[in-house]
Image 1 (tube, rainbow, N blue to C red):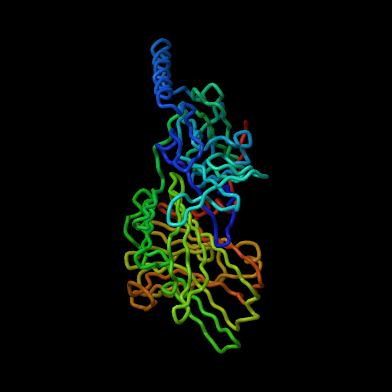
Image 2 (tube, rainbow, N blue to C red):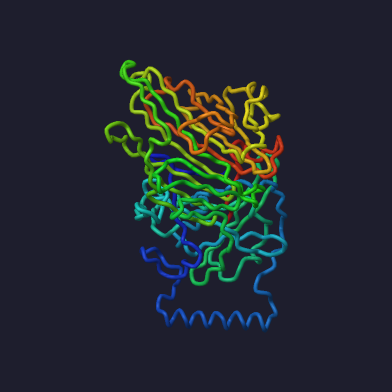
Length: 493
């Protein structure tokens, strides 16, 4: 994944896109419009004139509505799963242009067509702009190093699309009529040198049509993500911080069944010279979605969390973010430690992971340390008991129900100090309270080791999930490369 994502005081940011159908008229919040003809009569006249001109060209010259896109070079990039996130600064000649005039096109089979994309604004504080919800934010605009302009492309804004939608390289003659500015975006694989291309166009008075495809949808009423490859649900009526349902969609080669009991968060600490032991679970967190953005390529939620203490007291609120793509999820986390942990605690334990339900029986579990896999059948077999539980890079659970790869990327300061231990329990009747369904079939989690070695500071880590269709050992490399060998992107005038 090619991305430059600024972290916030809680976890990470998120922004808006002017959705399909909203780009041709002045926006209610005052953003720049994509119509130069503000007067209705002028706009109508311009539309009629444009239509007559197009009709004349079509009839008199016999040209098709879409131009042919004979390739200069054919796409040979094999990677399709990577999200591409390109900073506005990479397309500097287009900075300051109204967001509503942008389109992204790719050439395939001799046709240059629009593909799904979005532009996510980032405000002057480095936060993604989330336009909807209880507490949305705006790019209020401030002239400076990045020339922050609301509704216009800034250097820190992000252009987002999928590697699968890249196409062939074509010449200028294939561009749509009416394009005022355009840039060629070249994406290459650092290992295979395969390449693919897309074209970012801008036009103010008559932008070409957008792609009608929408890879992910967020339903705030349900607090549920509906993506092409999966569905993921929370429980807003219970103010819970954790995920309570997950299914791999048939489009992701899954059964569509809900496989998840719940996400587990378990924390304990012995403090005050050993006089007090504090233990908390996911049920001790109170959560509320305060802002969100629903784009065609990624949806994002900003969530306000706090932990219950005693006598009605709660911890200070923590702001968390999550991002959802067509077939992947990111859960960036930030930990602020005010003092060295060893100075106030004698023992600290943290673990997080997933408790699956009985519909996961028959799947197989793999890790970077045990690639042959073990069967999930509701009882701990000798092979499962012998799993290597040491520090690991990734886990996979896969079967006819679908496949899911989980990976934790530790940021600077954490990866040099902490380790991760695997927690794995396959027990149909074993308790794992609190839980909604008795049993862990299986429970897949991790615990951080050496927490007492952490000093005062701010630390980041990101949990990544990828939907794996029809997984076979070795197929994980395509997904590991997203972080290990990120695609190279450059924009050419």
